[in-house]
Length: 136
Image (cartoon, rainbow, N blue to C red; front, top):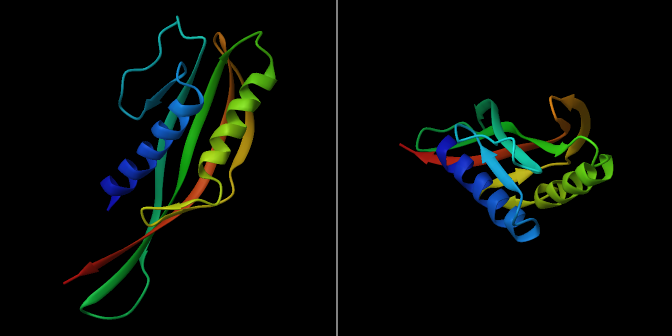
């Protein structure tokens, strides 16, 4: 279940983002991170939360997993906040109220995280739920 969720969410991000911003890299969990040569980049993580069974029965079991899609946007200091906010708006639009592969994304939140080394950072957090059925 978790592998399928991660694959669907990461594929959606990669497909939509590279269409909008083909020169800005997305770094997914456990992949090589940015170099100092990057002008901007995006760091992408899926945080899984509680999972629970949604019905009672022996032969057909519906489960729901909840979590957060957590995306940090890094732009070079001095570019201004509008660049980062524009990227944040684009990412929010990729996931806001979208239903795909059994995953329902909810309303994104955008937060200013501030300066980190040579970067200025904004965060986009998107709560989601994913429903899956298992048979015995």
